[in-house]
Length: 159
Image: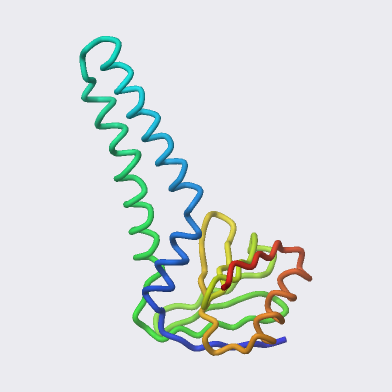
């Protein structure tokens, strides 16, 4: 199997992949923030004093940390250059005018089929979204089959 896709990153797809890929850490930060804000409210109810440290810490965790996580990751994935993705029996590679990265299947943790793209989750929390606009449904199934044959969990979220 050798599948090659050439595309320019779509900002909407990058944003969707980022939100999907980081949903757990973002949720954890938000829950921690709301917990700290609840503690600030309880402190106010019990002591009558509002703790600026708890209030600030809760707001930072609930709002600022998720915002920074999402924006930083999306900015790192976004490129305006033409990128070529190659998927083969040995793994996946992406290259543009400045760089080339290749990953063996053992470096991939899972593959998720989202609407309009495949999201490869790498070890170390790295994400590699690959647009599927140039692929037929049979080719997408071929990629997902290759990932599954290499022992990777495959999830389908496409609509």
